[in-house]
Length: 103
Image (cartoon, rainbow, N blue to C red; front, side, top):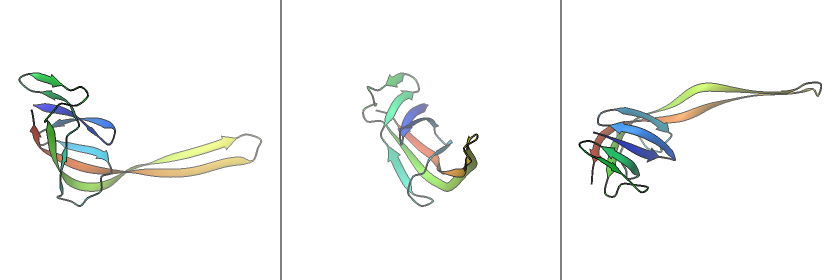
């Protein structure tokens, strides 16, 4: 059984026991959370929500807070003596799917 769940505006495929790397969620390691924005449930039969499946939830546990790889930004305009260098590291939270509750 798996579920398509929306977390912070992005969609993820959640299966029991799997690890998901999502955008940063405030919390400590070991915190339990529930997401009720389930878009689709798949198992013996498929349930598709409009837009969410009523009564469906995904329970997760926060595993760790990490940072992604550094993305380098470079802007340049020729003959204008202009160049700009910036960097950015996105923050992520790794969550473990504990349970998928279907309606």
